[in-house]
Image: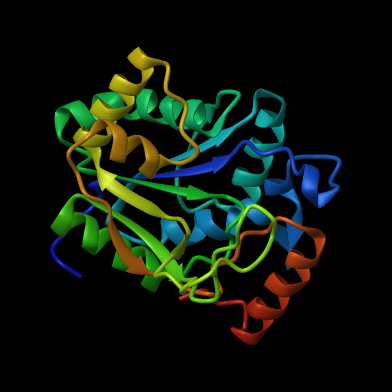
Length: 243
């Protein structure tokens, strides 16, 4: 990867979901997966990279005690800052950026990486790839080509002349120039904008163009109960080592 100053990337892991579609009684980020909680898999991966300095875990206030326990038991190698998020993903990201504001303003942090706790199998290879692309272009998002999508009309029929378009399914981690990202979120806050993900805010409130990086099919998002089974099988096939 291109040169990245050690400790200059801030990692933000978002774990504020409710787990409704998982039919879970608690936040799905803390559901067990192969002997540890879901959230600790990606945190441990990020903690292994010397490029990553500050690590922030964003949680709901009601999950604070559980998060502290999980971090103490399952991610002992690195200090991780707990930040209480907002009622939406965008507000949770803003809370993390406010926490990081002094490090961003001082230049200690030059890139911010945001990642969903629900994607436990993110590899070191993919993290390095999106970071390297953000160093070059300012903003990067991993994604998988989705080449089996066709257009239908309002009656549910295949649209005449419909052709497969070059579309992608976005993943995380997404990485952005830290100062530009903070400025974009500050501008969004003035407008009351509340976007669905980090890149939507960047595209609207900055001049950065977000570059696509080839994602990894193993980097699945745990959304439904069966996804846990798939994730555990993938971990077993990799001898429970994410590289």
